[in-house]
Image 1 (cartoon, rainbow, N blue to C red):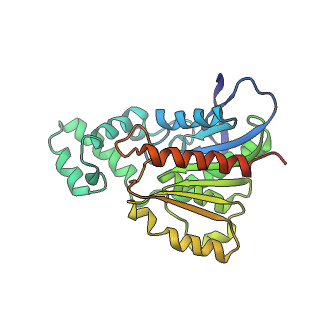
Image 2: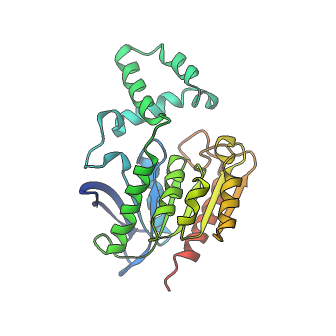
Length: 274
């Protein structure tokens, strides 16, 4: 399918936020839209590919570069710097990715300038103090931008995200009524006190081996039920965190195939024109 690809920007609190956009080229008029929120590693080739996959399925798909508010990423988070960090992490066993001591040991063999650069990027991306509320607020701004008609012509608006982006998606759904459907790929659940703000159905897709994320899902499901909200969850036995990312050793094709089919069906149902 031929696609129209654009690099646009929307406004968030007076600052430009870059947005990568894809939609079917041979379609006139508004289409349902899906906002795609990056993994912790930012908008990269994989996330842009996910945007294009959604466009080939008949949506206008957009991804904001949440690390580039104001029009430019900080030096430590440029695509080249993050790509170098990913290459380093993928040289390690998967269990070492979230182990600060194992990462530090592996870094010791690197030349000093390379080691310093990797440590700087690591310290930002893996910080426990990531500004999730800020990133969710930026995502909400993208939804309002789409709804306003100042961007591409769209109908109803959905949102999905992966890992870090799954958590951002959940928070954005708590704060932005323009989001009509949300799909969380293995992202942390919002606290129970935020659930009352969710105005849309939510689908959660989780790797069965991802205890760090999954431990919060039951409380989220209970809070959603108590508030009368719609939440559907699926756990894939044997699948790790980030099972959908087909550029990563965590990729699991069977789980990814099923999760993608559920995602497309969910958005087709809930973002259908009135």
